[in-house]
Length: 482
Ligand code: SAH
Ligand code: SF4
Ligand code: F3S
Image 1 (cartoon, helix red, strand yellow):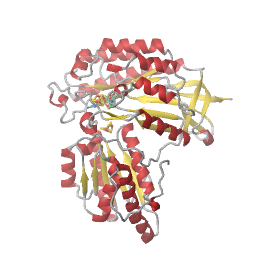
Image 2: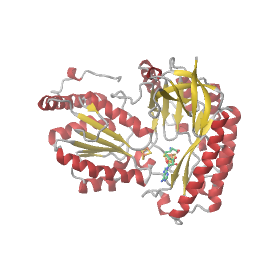
Image 3: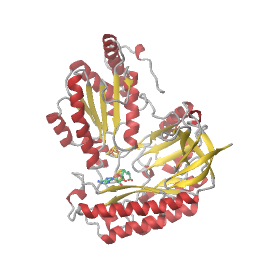
């Protein structure tokens, strides 16, 4: 962990500081005092479990929450029978949302057996007022509820609950704040997500994210670069730059800067080996970004370019601001510039009014682009979005059939891509010990494809040369080369 501050040096008797970062360290000191006392009382460390739903934004937020929990004296465990359980929720699709209610039922039973247990909820679902109302009414055993805009206030909210034992609810509608320099505990020692911007201004008609993550806000380039330098000093070799639409990074800063220029600054950081980013919106991926990628030795050979639909008619209804033709042109331009690049995507099946012909357009784009991989989603109606009140919602059985057909097409084209790589020797970042096969490790190529090969734990976090011997659908089997 970095940004470590010795909480014992903080004077907790005076008034809480006004500066947001200092104020949170003050409350961390307050929480620690209470947790330390409790630890002595029960003669063991208190445990905490953080469960994350949703995207990489949420995973990164959870690393920040875990950083605070460790700082105040909790031991992090995987088991939800912990003394403190925090759910960082997602609401992008209905099933993400339903899962949380299901889990809460189980937690209620755990809390009956351990009345001192604390339960907290945060994340995107909590930004929906009907969700918070429901929890306040039917899930009274929850201790702390906060949203996406005030996650930095976690220590303060927890302190308020620890000292009052009342349900603490604090949800902000939006924010223009970006609080830097709070503790973070990374899941991986060698790679890390880095937020470059928060929120989204695009309002794709199916999507809830702009409503729950607020308006677009970019971090200052120097804060991003400094964070990455600290990460590199702490052993990180790969960063994933995170934003809902990284192409609009920096436009609203006092001193505007483009995403392409940010990439150039990050490229210069010594010791950093790999740069990834997500997500670029196809409507405004600039030639400059393609040029920077082409000339870079660090930016990975992968572009995640969400298609959503291949039909220009549906894309218009989705408010995506590109057509089938302009999307295909863009892919052509990227491939012409960077021939060995992998293109990956997100696709939604069953958007309201999607006809067989529209769906055929999606299949056509899948074939023409030849994606290396794709996340496919069944359209999920989100209350409050324009698409939720559109007519012609597609019947479930038709959506399911189209979904299966799409999966098959993607499998065909992605398998063809993997086959092309067989025999090559590629640089691989080793990420973990293979869980299925003893004596094997798993890593990723620059284009993000997974490869398994014989090796030991001490390779984790290292970049090694691997010969790709065999393609197995989405992944390779290989051997390490000296
Ligand atoms: N900002 C990113 C994506 C964020 S959400 C982008 O613009 O690409 C991740 C993915 O979830 C989206 O790309 C979309 O494919 C899917 N998604 C979003 N809302 C959805 C909905 N209502 N139903 C089904 N899938 C959805
Ligand atoms: Fe949602 Fe569209 Fe914003 Fe992505 S760009 S988060 S899909 S509104
Ligand atoms: Fe991510 Fe889900 Fe929120 S996809 S931004 S965690 S709604």
